[in-house]
Amino acid sequence: FRRLHPFRVPTMYYGSRDMWPDEAPCVFQTHRRLTSQAFVRGIVTMAAILLLTVLMYILAPPLMGYSQQRHLLPSTAFAAPQRAIAYALPHVAYAPPRQQPLPLRPTRQAITAAAATSDAAAQAPIRTILALGDGYTIGESVLPSEGWPMQLADQLRAKGIAIGGVDVVAQAGWRTDDLQAALEGKAQGDQPKPQGWAAAFLMAAPKGSLLQKEYDVVALQIGGSDRMEGKSVEQYGADFEALLKLALTKTGGDASRIFVLSIPDSGAAPADVATGIDAYNSVNKDLAAANGIGYVDITAISRKGATDASLITWDGVYPSAKMYREWVSLMVDDVTAALDAKG
Image 1 (cartoon, rainbow, N blue to C red):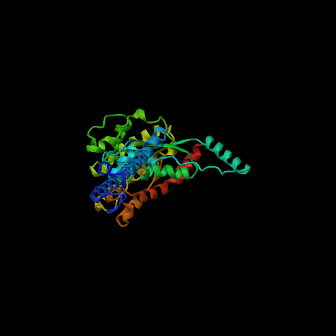
Image 2: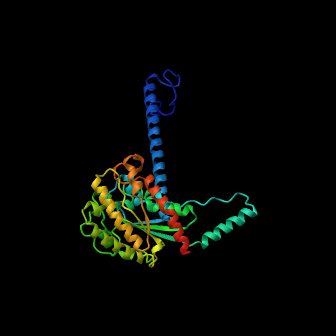
Image 3: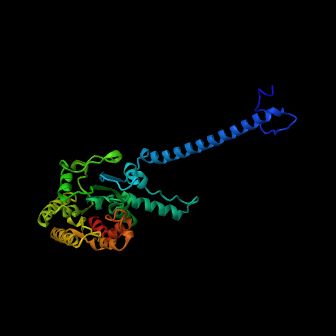
């Protein structure tokens, strides 16, 4: 009977009057085995709980309908896995802010203030932003929330302006004619296609019908790839003017709500490249002025990256979130004034 029931006294020690001497090794081995199994089960249970928690965090927001930004055409190359995750799961980066709860015992003044705030928010117009361009517009090498379009939206919200969302039509390597083709819904021609696992996280190229008819603000920044591929200044000017005409159709012809950002320069390029960028910027600045469109010169800030590593990402080319923040600081007041003038 004792040999058939080795689990009855798992804590006994060798030499007990209740245990035969030859039973002790069996009991010790059984106790050791049970302890190991319990440890493994505990580890597996904790891992399962952690996995379920992560899945709930990922799946709950889309099921509840959270959505703030549409990246109509993400970049074809990711700088890091978290960039792909951010595109596949945008609610992680753009979860809407939670409202502060009222006090447990709100006073009459608190209730009145909360009601007034709610009424003001309900009456405030919901603004929309359209950002057009290339890799600098889409925020290559940083998360979407760190690019200048989303940082602009965040700073406008901080000023009390309700921003309904940001539409981004941009791709690293795009020239002016590529952006024009995308806006007109034409085929992309020789545009590079995503390769490998990154392709699973990308959405299809946008057609013109996917865009809203009009936007409250349209921002345009493009020309770096035109310069790198040797396009003449004259041809760039013609293509850029065509883009300005398309941008005007997205604001109902109101040029005061369109903003052109100059072409950046990392500061590490040869002198002839910097000279070419200046020539391109001279063209897009003159065209913006001729059409009554606001101009934001960010080139001087971008050249600080040659001496300040915090302004450039790991690739040595694209700006960091810190530099994008400085860009936005140059334009946010003008954008705010344009939105206030619209009413």
